[in-house]
Image (cartoon, rainbow, N blue to C red; front, side, top):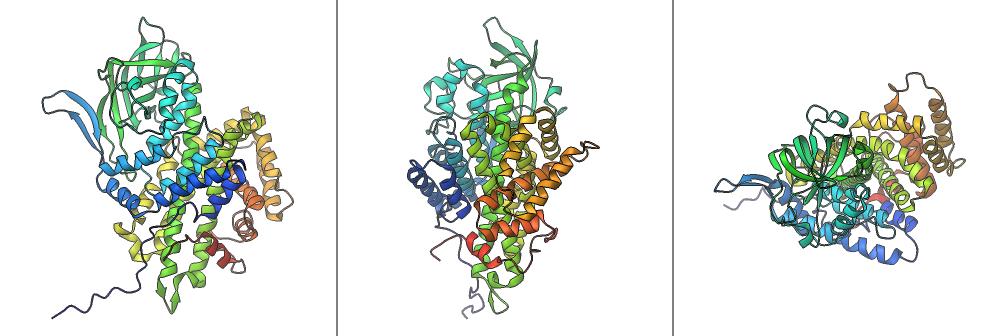
Length: 547
């Protein structure tokens, strides 16, 4: 007898075959706002092509395969020779190759480079987030290497290349290269000044050998690594290549790969330097933190962008599902309570994307005002946006109900990925304390921030009241370290509110200011005032598909 019970009805089609870029108004409008008009058509075409690729069936399959088959460490070959190599699934290489080819490691030398790269990073991360680590490390290594013009001249063309070459061989024979980073150690963590890795100078100027252990090494399959170690003159930054100029392998012992909560497609490692690990100094001895801080700042922006990408994809999946799912007599998306949840999630996503693009535009501006603004805005934004990612992913998963709780939906992968950026490059307390340092040591940073948010004063009474409240908090130094998280949160929220008031549609700005800066919102998503134009907010955020 033929089975008759397995008729499939009321199941949404896959969210596939769509343009991730064109379907995101916060992103497309931000590009129009921040990119020079003479280049806007070319940039739109560039990002449109990337958006279509990111939303394609084959890119989604690459992401699934790269996570289903995580990297494998090979310490030795069959004869017992050290290899210290990491094997990845072919889909990982396809993802990474497409990203490098799209210029996602190339921002520093192109006009509007940071805005177009940040937008591309947000788009392509929605296909798969794990391979964003080597993209970010490679991109962020450039400003640190510029502390040594000779090293920069040698490596920068390779790191910003649009050619992906996975094979390990001397850098001089490659058309493109990737960079990783090894800073933290098990006894110090974020307190890198507690590092014990030693650097002993050799006879040749600027050359050293390293001895020590790194608890976290990002992207261990890379061609070179920025490393912190204690030189005779103090904590110093070094560039350690995987392959030496003569073709021999540098001593770079990968002890194990980390078994992580999420980010499964990407390799993070513990590595050992055995006294024969050759490296070149970057910057002056004793100036390691000052040298590498530019790399840290650039990767923190990617934490904001990466979290914005995860949020956007989670919200897009929730919107798509509820638009195609019938319940209680009609589409879920039209039910008042579900609409409230979706609108609230959409607000969070748009605020994150708008903020990420504004930070990128400040990098492109590169004036003293821009640099001062970034000094305060980056740690505050990194603190807040990355904190919001996990609850957004969890709530979006719930919008799919039981369907969202199974691996095939892709939502569990987004939820596991969501906490990463809050931890990477300094967790919440590190960012909040960095906000305090900027406030206490760099008056120009606060002035630049106040100038930025002041551009929206008078446009919304809740934003104006929030600005006054923030100024009152900043004037009170009592117990300021214990209040650092509260300050970082308020700084980021006020900045997001000011940007949305200036640039977003009125319904978005009004709802954000009412719920995030006013008193008309609850602790959970879906608690917006019912009088707000929720349907317009939801419709704006819906991904456009042919289905």
